[in-house]
Amino acid sequence: MSSTHSPRLTRRGFALGMAGLTFTAACGNGVGNSNASTIDARVDATLNQMYSLYPNTVEISEKAAGILVMPLITEAGFGFGGAYGRGALRVNEATVDYYSAVKGSAGLQIGAQQYAHVLFFMTDDALADFRRSPGWAAGADLEYVVSDQGDSLATDTTTLRTPVLAAVFGRAGLRLGATLEGTKYTRIIP
Image (tube, rainbow, N blue to C red; front, side):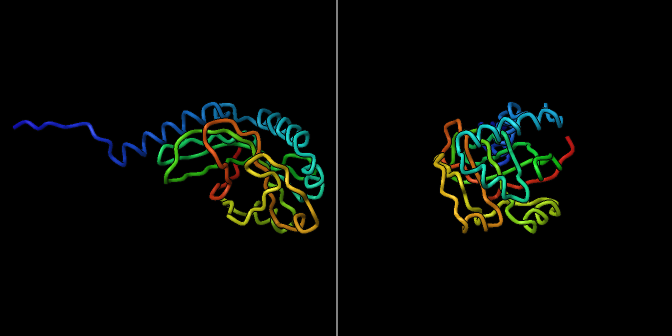
């Protein structure tokens, strides 16, 4: 009795393939170079770039209780997708913790991109909630001070009272619409 097997792509095989693609994309993301000094150097460079390109973020940073800087997020997808990056939380310009960012998604998507993002915790409560959480997830209620088109948005007293503000910038790749919704942040030890 012989059976013939035709090659076919199963959901499991597809998911494993996407996981491999995402891991491969993340390899250029500093996964192997995760020591504290490397992350801090990337955070410094990212902040310098953001302040230079988007001057409105200087005032926001000065008023924030803390800022989470993710210098490089690598995101890839083909049906299923994922994103990964590492960064640092700074309070009063000093690094207090290191974090990873992970995001998974499904649906109509294809391509890969890399970008940086910064979360500004504008209240002590927002910062405390983030630091206490074993895995804080970004929601749809984030207000963007640098849009996904790279435009700098005006900051006013209403904006500065929002608990968490976000800046997404420095995109490169063939995937449109970087959004932080669903991104999960977890404290790490580099």
